[in-house]
Image 1 (cartoon, each protein chain N blue to C red):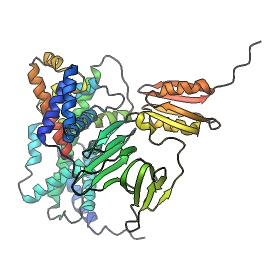
Image 2 (cartoon, each protein chain N blue to C red):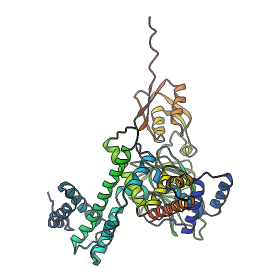
Image 3 (spheres, each protein chain N blue to C red):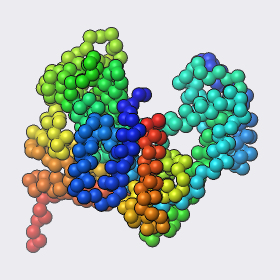
Length: 341
Length: 172
């Protein structure tokens, strides 16, 4: 896959900024100079973003593995022996053996352990991120999401592998404007100058157009004419077809601002949505369906959001800590106990 | 029901070389079960590779291919053992008691392996400086004091490590 690649000199500059800003106390002056550098060239911003992502990727540790523990284990693992590496390099000398090595390395590369690093940008549950793409488009990456950015001379392609995005597209500055495409396993979305959200679910890709138009191409119907979605419309794309979908009872782009804005939403659906943004586990009991809610809810502090909900609804919020992960449980508050005689 | 061998002759390959590969691995591992696992894994990977690039793998020397894959798997296997040993040692050195489910432990080891692969081939000193700064969040100055090196050296080490990670990732 071709990736946008800033020159290595730019990467080295970005690294120097990273050292100045991340690995030591930085003053305002340094930060100002850094911002000037970053804004000076989209390639600067891109190199910076890529480095950030790599750095964050290395810090994504599972519960139960503290950074100190990881650091200490990795620092004390004996170095891979030179002999063993040499054994891998000299497999007998024949060209078949060399070709075989290529195959073997290629296969090892494709093991699951590598995959998280291959998606170019990803977020954890509860995390959101805003990326400025090389053409000036803005990509908001939602909770627990992963995209590959694949910009080539022929096209601007964003591969949504998981989760959801909000894309604010910019006109292409190339002399021959390149199409801007969002690809999912269900098909292609061709942006026609526009702002829209895409959410990938197991069975379908959900599109919500906020501005202008988007053309939908189901993956399994390459010859069919595209379906055009216009502002305000929602579509459901499967490999076979693109059909209009119900407008969701919440603002589909509000998550990019860190909130969930809903009107008359059944409480279990609201909790399902909140759970997607909560790094711990959020569960709820039966019997909450009769409640509907309207309002704007903060996504960055879900325990607090639930506490606020419990002020207006008869809810009982229980925080449990399963030894490595926070867990919240929502249920109906029991009616007040009868007074003791 | 037709259960004919796949047209690519994979069954024949398996029949002709599985026992030999198992022996080859057993001599290196001194363990029949591990050797059997790795032999399975080797054939599985060969099978996947053949499906993905049907033309490219002409198997005039199947044993050369098999040993190439197996050597790679062996190297990963040994590395995984070393990482696990280092992890258990680090865990034992912690003051607080810890317990992890088998599933959690596998996930932890997998992540450690991934980071280890990313930092592979960095000099131990560079690696340690980077781990202290990046994972433990020490400043360059603190790392310099801890490792008894100058701050400029630490900064250079971190730059080396970041550049290495960048190139590794972009080539991935």
